Length: 99
Image 1 (cartoon, helix red, strand yellow):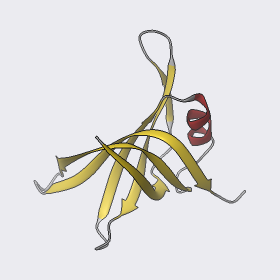
Image 2 (image 1 turned 45 degrees about the vertical axis):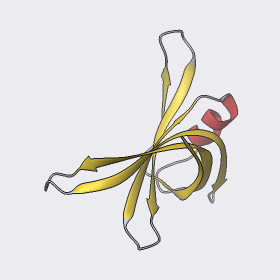
Image 3 (image 1 turned 90 degrees about the vertical axis):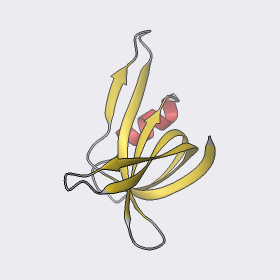
Image 4 (image 1 turned 60 degrees about the vertical axis):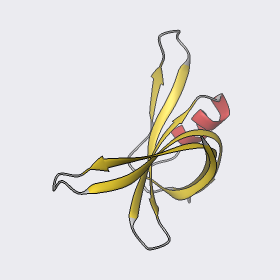
């Protein structure tokens, strides 16, 4: 597990779900750029009520920064190219969006 900070833009809208025990959680995708300009997707899950509510109020394209535990992984696109990705359990959020 790596503690990290990721800044980017919400990709699509977040989704609220409920686990088997009836506890709500939120999932979302964040699009971020690496230092060399490559696109990186971060798969986010949040369990804390305040973080879930904050993510849920954001819309596609809103800027945000998340901190939490990160697990790196790779995925394969339709052309067969491997791409980096991150899975994050978000513990806090800073959102910057206009109304």
